[in-house]
Amino acid sequence: MADLLHRLTRSSAFQNSITIVILVAAVLVGLETYPSIVREHGSVLDVLDQIVLWIFVVEALFKIGAEGRRPWRYFADPWNVFDFAIVAVCFLPVDAQYVLVLRLARLLRVLKLVRALPRLQVLVRALLKSIPSMAYVGLLLALLFYVYAVAGTFLFGENDPVHFGTLPTSMLSLFETVTLEGWVDLMQIQAMGCDRFGFEGMEALCTNPSTSPIASPIYFVTFVLIGTMIILNLFIGVIMHGMEESRAELEREQAEERRSLLPPAPERTPVQSLVQLEEELGRVRESMAALRERMSS
Image (cartoon, rainbow, N blue to C red; front, side, top):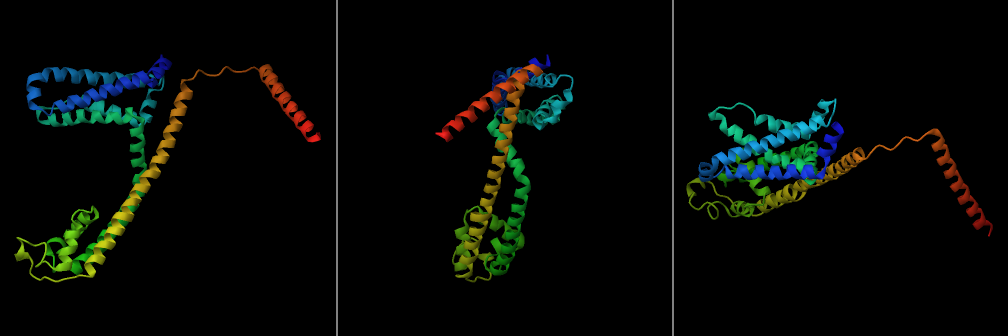
């Protein structure tokens, strides 16, 4: 029975069916965002939602049964734990005031699509594998933000108190700069002075205007080059490296699954092994004889 369930849960027909059910669950969750549809067809949506839920329950039971006498091996796979948790949350007894929790749990079922599509698994695994390296890149980016924020507060705080008046506002302005959104305007405010550019309607805040025609371009251009063009590209490099590792792991797992689905090879007797060895030795002798003939000629 366990072998039958194992083959069934690994079959493409079963996996494609679960993918279709996940898409149906996603559509149902989207329909629940329309109050008019809920009022008119709420009972139908509830019935379909229960059908989807029980299909997921059957899926989990089949996969647990596929482990045979060791059902706890089902929870050795993090994806199985994720699927089981989503199904279990939907059975939690919630009051009317916590109905939002139930709706969010239904929304999480859409994430099962990641399990159903191997390519999405590669992306998720790559992100998870990249977290440790991304943490160091993020630390480097944070140090860059801090150094430039302190320098920006000293250089432009008096001229532009709105964007560089304090350290937190300077870091927020640098975040806007690193996204390449409006950084040219920030540079112009420091280069031309707040009394000439950028403070229209906020003249009362421009109490000490000053110009930095040289420091401002150097400050912003170097920050954009380092923060956007270099460090943010390090994130991309780390993720690409994680994707290569995740793709290799997925290929190994798929190869192991294919081998597990194949029938076991029949065991050979000692006599059969000896006969095969003699045949291989005969082929080796023939190859050596042919090689001697070519060398002698």
